[in-house]
Image (tube, rainbow, N blue to C red; front, side, top):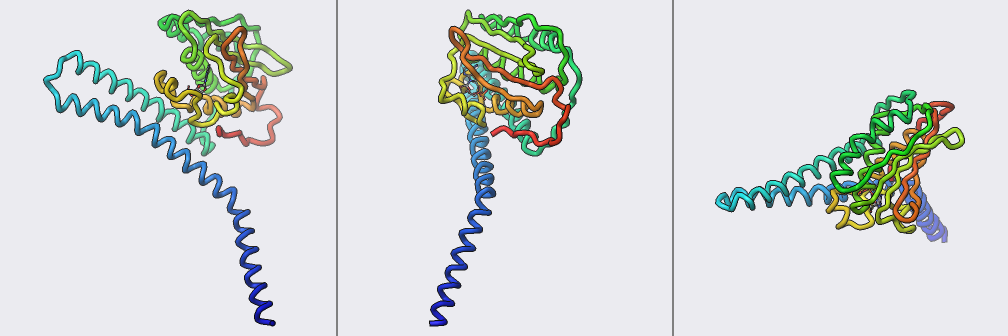
Length: 271
Ligand code: ADP
């Protein structure tokens, strides 16, 4: 009886320790799973343009007597895929920096209206070349402490998306407002809009509402997760809402002085 009781206790203690170790291992396993998923997604995204470039180069090598016009088309496709690769590697590097918290930020007091004018100006030409209008609405005179490079990158992502997902003839509006000791950067478009169910997920890494459309427009599904990281480095938030009568409005709400009263430097990483 003693032996059986000891055996049962021994078995129970093994089962208990297995259950406990599962509990302690769970967060590690989960983050490992996320990491593996990220690497898998990144590899998948890299593979497609690489395969296209490889195919086009092989065609050029094996069929040197093809018509010049066909050769030029193959070169153009290879070149646009290599641009996609370049953008993808830049985005992956930004996310690696966000994961390792190794980015050196440079916060400085900035006249928001002037800074936005300067930043938006080059995009008006790009929009015009696509038959769209980019309008900078008047902004009140106020200063905010921000990292100019990062906010420039944030605006690049939001304006680029607004242009990608809206039709010719439409207008994209950029503005900034002071709201309760914070400021808001708003980029609004008259494009295809975003369904309620997708709004939470669009900030996830590699998430795209319509993969084929996003690929056609050169998207990799990383832009908004980088946007969210930039906003969180400024201790702000970012949200999307409907634009009237249609389209989307991205609103980044940022403190006027993100460095004030901070006790923790833990930034929310992109999902
Ligand atoms: P992508 O590189 O695919 O544009 P993002 O992370 O920037 O990746 O955006 C994620 C997805 O959110 C996009 O694939 C698109 O489906 C949707 N999206 C982003 N911005 C807009 C917008 N202004 N209008 C409509 N859909 C948008």
